[in-house]
Length: 287
Image 1: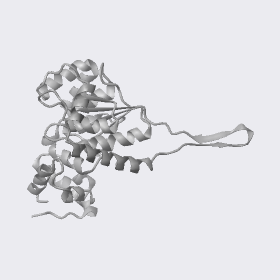
Image 2 (image 1 turned 45 degrees about the vertical axis):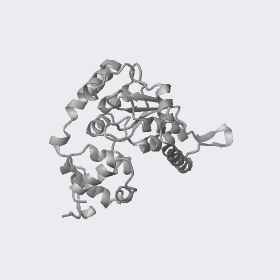
Image 3 (image 1 turned 180 degrees about the vertical axis):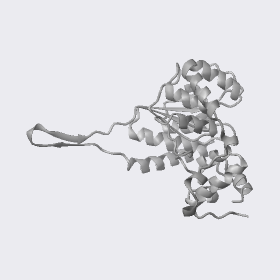
Image 4 (image 1 turned 90 degrees about the vertical axis):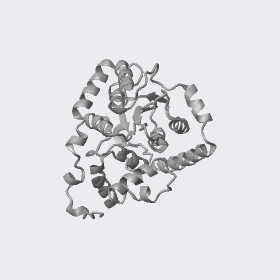
C-alpha cells in the first residue's frame, strides 16, 4: 500500500534520513580522498583497476576515441542531442548576468564585474547506465557562463572505454577534456588535481553514495545539499535510485513526489535510458 505523506508534517531529518549501515561510506571515502591527494595519478590507476576491473594506460580520453564514438552513434541519437543542446542553450542564454559600471562625480567609479569560474569538473555516472543528459545540462550552462575549461570524469567500462553516448554528447556540448575515472577518487582528483587531471573551481553532477560522500567532504568545491544532489531531473533521479537500497527508495520517492519533482520520471517516454530500472525500483517501493 502506498504511504501518503503530508509534507508539512514530516521533518527534514526524516525526509533526508539515510540508513547508517547502508550508507556508512564515510571512512572509505576519507581514505580514498587522502590517497588521491597524496598519490595523484597512481592512486587513480590503482582504484580503476580495483573497482572497475580494468588496467588503463591513460586516464584521458583521446580525440580519436571521441571521433570514433561520434561517428559510430545512431544518427537519430545525434539529432536528438543537437536538438536538446539547442533548447538548453536557448534557455540558459537568458540567465547570463551582465556587469555594470557607473561614473560618479569626482572620478568615483561604481560597478559590478561578473567573472566566470575558470575550470569546472562534471561527474557523469557510468556503469549500468549512461546519462548523456547530464553532460548537456551541466556542460552547456558552464560554456555559456564563460568557463574556460570544462572537464568530465566518468568511469570506464570493462574494455577500458567510455560509453560512446557520453562521448558523443560531450562533443556536442563542447567539453574540453574527458577522463576515465569514477567514484570518490574522481571527485578527489578534480578537487586537488593530479598529473593528468586539473584542479577545478567547481564540481557538479550526480553520482552514487561514494560520489555524494566525497562531495560532502569537499563542500568548498562540490554541489552537495543535505545529502541530495541539487540536479533533480529524470536522469539524476534514475542514477540516485541506482545507489540506494530498497528500504531507502520510499523516503526519496515520497520527497520527490511531494515536491512535484518526479512527474517527469513517471510520465516520461518509456524509451528513456534507465526508465525500466527506475520504474521497477519505484514499483518495489509502492510508487
